[in-house]
Image (tube, rainbow, N blue to C red):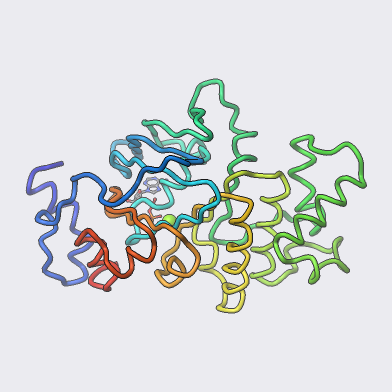
Length: 290
Ligand SMILES: Nc1ncnc2c1ncn2[C@@H]1O[C@H](COP(=O)(O)OP(=O)(O)O)[C@@H](O)[C@H]1O
Ligand SMILES: [Mg+2]
């Protein structure tokens, strides 16, 4: 991978931008710059490598995600943001040709340990996708489903309480309280996404992963979700992939910049957007590619 020809091939997609940057001169393959490590990590990733068949999508990434922080992950399309995010709750297990090695811990426990059951793991580390995907069930059932499956409740009144509480936290309650038993799919796109967030919250996760949660939403719905993230970060740890640099700047406290499967830079968000350390980060945020 370190040969000149290897780089040329790797950087081919970037050549489409017509920019004459010689990336092989830009320190790719060196260590991540900035502060990927922390003493108050909720999740820690060490030396993560991910392959789809023999094609490597993530190269030796190490990163800590802090308790109650919103961490944004940015970078050009195809740089591995979704792949990385999916490693955090083992969603990649569901992709047959995907191979993961390295270490990922949640509260210092290895989530890839062979005795780790992925069902409770995915309740602790929930995920919200780009396209809202409510179940073809009522609004109530969408939220009640997880607590029922995970055996979190024994009485109906308790379930009602969790449903209301989750919908309130997702800032959707007032809009749906009079139609809890109508289909979730009948809501607007922005409401559906908040319903999916309520469904994730209902099982009391510790970490919420969001993969471009606003990219199918209009600006008003996006603003609602962004406000919500600020509130949620008081109780949850959030890792969000976004293709919008404005969104990363608005919602996150730290930002991780990925490039061709490598974690190039991690810094305070303000720093990344005003004074990036790495020239690849700078090239991206100034719009020279991406
Ligand atoms: N299921 C898959 N099978 C094969 N290759 C994949 C799969 N998912 C992603 N990839 C490849 O892995 C790389 C990273 O993809 P992805 O994580 O989706 O990037 P991003 O989310 O940053 O756009 C890309 O080259 C992509 O084509
Ligand atoms: Mg993606």
